[in-house]
Length: 75
Image (cartoon, rainbow, N blue to C red; front, side, top):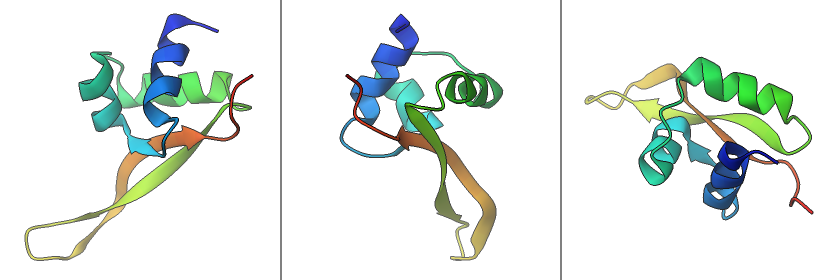
């Protein structure tokens, strides 16, 4: 398991988090596309998710913030 995957796994072990939260928690500088590629390469471990996002007036912004969660606890 790569160092990046280990860092991300440690952050999302307690629950799903946005890419922005993961960046701020780990110091990783991955772009959204790089996160998606990493998740695709580790599809048995991670699952992409979307978080609701609203503007200042409360209107839903679609598609929302991208993030990920653990699919299964790593062994």
